[in-house]
Length: 80
Image 1 (cartoon, rainbow, N blue to C red):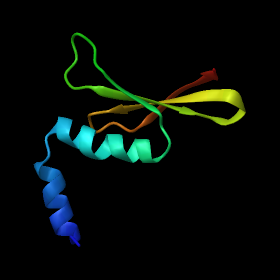
Image 2: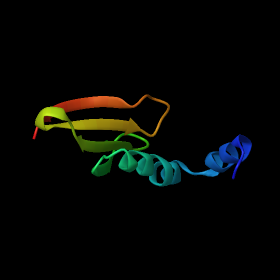
Image 3: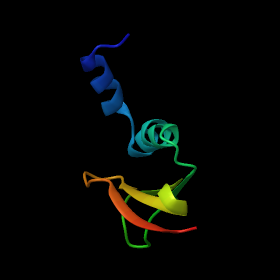
């Protein structure tokens, strides 16, 4: 088992893409998100991850996770 310093050290060595693919993607998929897409604008640096999950009352929840220091944002909830 790794202690906190070892965990932090391993995470700090990951590139942005490795962190997104190996850590973030797996955490959200484990929480029931069924679709995961990386998107970015033509003039932007980095990628945003967009995730979808079935929500209550027949709706779909959409979350955006930016590969920056921003917070995770609940973007929309719409009918299927």
